[in-house]
Image (cartoon, rainbow over all chains, first blue to last red; front, side, top):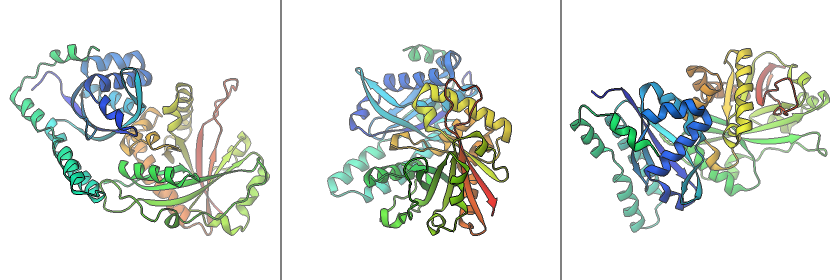
Length: 171
Length: 237
C-alpha cells in the first residue's frame, strides 16, 4: 500500500513563550524543519525531503506534531530536528525546540503511543492543578490530542497517492 | 527502557533557572543529571568548595517522563588546567574534592591532553553544534577525528545547556551522535550505559578517581585540529 514505505515522527514542540504556540501551524513548522535540514544537510538534504516530507498533524495546545517522511530519508530528517531552534510567525521568531517522542512505521503505531503519552502527561499536569477549571481545560486539550481521524483517513485510502503531497510541501 | 543521563548541566547561582533546567531534563526523559561546577586555576586563586547537597538545593525533584521516579542529581567538578602543577590538587587529600560524584579536568594544552591514556571517557558537547554554524562544523569535524582514534567507544554526549530550550531529548541526542560519527549503538551508549559507567566509577572513588580532560575549541589560525571534547578518565590511583 502506498508507493513508498514511510516513517512517522511524533514530536513535541517545547516553548518558553506562550505566543510560540500560535505559530504552530503547517507552514511555520514546515519552514523551520526545512531550514534545519538545510543547515544540517545542505541542498542534498533539502532536496530529499522536498519529495518526501509532510506535516501530517498538529495540535497547538499540546504542541504535538506528526511528521511524515519516506523511510529511506527519515534519518536525515530526524537528525536535523535538534537544530530547530525557533518558529516564525509574521516575522516574529519564538524560541522553541523539538522533542522526538516516537518514531513509527504507521499512523496507528504513533496513535497507540500518543494515547499512552497523553495519559502520562495528563497525570503529571493534573497533579499541579490548583483549581477545577484548570483541570477541565487541561483534560480537554490533552484528550483532544489524537491521531484517530488521521488513522481512519489512512485506512480508507489504501493507495495513498504520494505525488499529491509534493505540491503541499512546496513552500 | 534505557536509562539516560546528561552529565553536564552548568551550575548556576540562579536556583530558579537551574530548577527550570531540571524540569526540562526530567520532561525529556533524563533519569540523572550532573550539575557541573567549573574551577579555573588561571584565575585568581579559586577554592574548591564543598558541593551543595542537591537535596538541599531542590527539595522537590520533578518526575522523569516515562518513569515513576524523580530525577537524580549528582555533583560534578571540572578543573580547567593550563599547567601540570594544577593537577596536584587531584592527588591531594582535600576532602572537598572527594565529595563530588564526578571529577573532570579540562586540559588547555595538548601535552596535558596526552598525559592520560587508560580508561578514558570522552565527552562531546552538543549545544555548541546547535548554537552556531561555525561551532557546528568544528564540533562535527573534531568529533569525527576523535572517533577515528577511539573507534566510537567510551564516548559520552552531554549538553552544557544553560537554558531549558538548549536541551535535547535522549533519542534526538543519539541522532546527533550519528552526525558525530558514532554508530547507532555507540551513540545510544553515549547517553546511557557509558554515563552509568562514569557514575559507577565515581561512586567507587576511594582507590580510583574519575578525570575528564577537555580541549578548548580550535581557533581559525590553528593548523592542528584540537578537539572541543571533554574526556572522562578513570585511572587507578
